[in-house]
Length: 221
Ligand SMILES: *Cc1c(COP(=O)(O)O)cnc(C)c1O
Image (cartoon, rainbow, N blue to C red; front, top):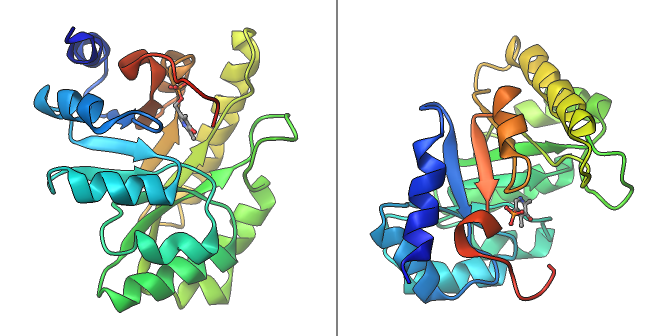
């Protein structure tokens, strides 16, 4: 037992200071999250809004909840009162909905735009040019209850680390380009259990790690 705490310790021991670890607890029971919490972990990621809401309700309120999954716009309202960071924003329409719901709670919700870096058709995310367009649009500038603080990306699922390395490098380059004109930019969310070391080498400031902490998931999500 206590393998969750041990996994956390092992991962954190090798993380550079500027890298935030998001413990991805999707599909895992409250007891597992509690074990990580007792080991000092306070930042957790979920990919389904309902699941995150019920875990938020059941667990201590000093946890930072990150939504890392693909967003259904009509469900944003259920997490608007507590979500700490939304990683997977991939349209201006969704940003507008987050802004609207944040306003109702008098909050400013931090968001990341998800960039498409993998070649796989199945992966979500915006082409680089669409990210540039959103950030320079007039409409974006009127959204006062969101703050886009950076980018998120997922690399191709492959054993070829040179492909992953190239994809993360391209995201880092876009991040640096956008940072020049976007003073809020500070977070680059890239890296999962299988590739976070490559991501960190390429300048990641936030990694999202699930199975290396909690063990394999019972079903694919
Ligand atoms: C599930 C998930 C992760 C964590 O994946 P692991 O391989 O278990 O570390 C990270 N990011 C996103 C967007 C996910 O959906």
